Length: 273
Image (tube, rainbow, N blue to C red; front, side, top):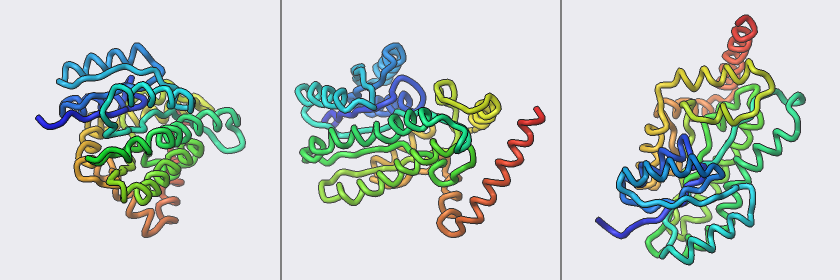
């Protein structure tokens, strides 16, 4: 086995963050499980250790720059370097512009977007010191591309994450730091449970999309591992999600009209249910 590698995964207490942490553990990584949910983080730690890795639970509110600074100081005093940062922590908000409370906009932007900004701002100079090279993974979403109606706050934060990844890619390439922006389609996670929705119909519609997906968090995590190894900028999961990316680039209005029609049919079906 080669030199031990060190990673921070935010939102590691469940869902995709947990799956990524376990995949890293299978490859012998030492993982800091950064989350505000201590019980879930402890459960992830047990899975990490079962998978053959090492880990430690770290309380982190990603919306707090001071907590990011405390985490860096603690880890930098104990770790020889930082090899990987996975900005995964995120929440969901559903509803229409003009109807959703502004507080819900602020809530999701602080977690989904500023959480990653604070993390990179705090840690990038440490990662630049890694002579072996390092990597940053930002979890965006297919929502960044399809811009579905009724999901504006979520769409905006995930589009921001994708743009952030593209910008970092150019800025950090001279320092041998790879960047990956991950755009998964729907797959089952706890984001519905923790999310905020304008109506119960919107919550139920999102839950049906997730439960009906064939993809899993483990599938997405494995694709992320391959992307890190290959230093890929984009990851679409499942691979068919890449069709939307190509269609958006070639015929954006065709895609947006298609999504709008699908949304109208889904809304009508939900109203009749």
